[in-house]
Every structure is written in structure tokens, then in C-alpha cells.
Length: 177
Image (cartoon, rainbow, N blue to C red; front, side, top):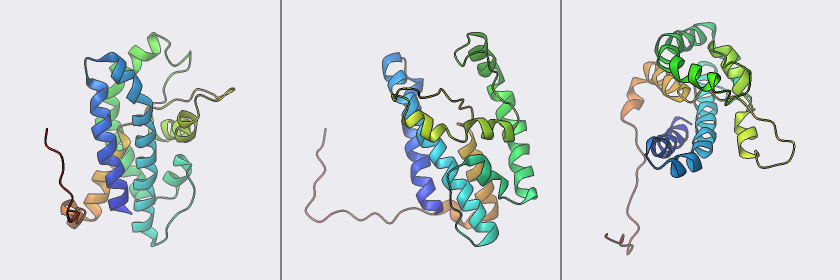
């Protein structure tokens, strides 16, 4: 489960780096797919933590409900990391977005349970934003997968060096640029 989540996390990071490009058209094109990958990565890392704590594989996709299945100690650790690392770092960005009313009149939730509650269905809302009557959703938990990965690796430090055992396909030659 961790390796599955890690693959999506790496894809999210690679795609997310394109949102920092001076090419604003490219950045605008990849921002929603990046958010979808972040939401899905959050779901997988939360499920991994739940599995580590209970031995069970949780079901469902609602991020806040998954977060609530963690032990109080794990939730407290994640909230502490969010409050001390993410909120101070993102506060200027969130204030700017709110001042320009990009997200409407509603303020972003700064506390993690509130942010998770607001972002819990982002995976679905963003994927289907083209549909009529789709509702805009807040998504300010893009940094959460890094925190969750950190908490997992604190629980299982031996996983820090895990990687997929990739073997070359016989006869396949990658084209050189």
C-alpha cells in the first residue's frame, strides 16, 4: 500500500513542479490534475497509516472520515506538523487567494480537520468539474501527502529505502534524444 501511494506521490510531485513554470498556460493546464493526484495520494497514505495501526485495509474515499479512523496520537502528530509547518508557510498564499476572491467569499479552513472536511470530496469534484451543476470545491491540503509520508516513515523507518524492482524489458531500447 505504501509503495502504491509513493508512486502517486512521485507523479504528483513531478506534475506539480510544472505549476511553477513561467509558462502560465502549462501551469494552468496541470493544476487540476495535480490536485487530483494530491487528493488520491492523501487517501492512500491515510489508508496506509490506518492499516499500520489496525492491520485492516480501510474502505472509502472520504478523506476526513479516513483521518478520523487514525488513533488520537497519530491525528495529533499530523495536526501538529500541519500547524507548525504548513499553515505558516501557506498563510500568505491563502490570504492572497482569498483577497482576490478566487475561491469566492469563503475563507480556507486553516485547521487540518476543517481543511480535510472541506477538501474531502475534492478528488471527485475536480475530476468532474466539467459537468453541468458541478460545485467548486476548496482544496488547500496539497501539502498533506508530505506530512503523511513523514509520519509513516517515522513508524516504519526501514521503508525509506524501498523502491520498485524495475527490470528492463528484453529487446526494448529507449530512444535517445
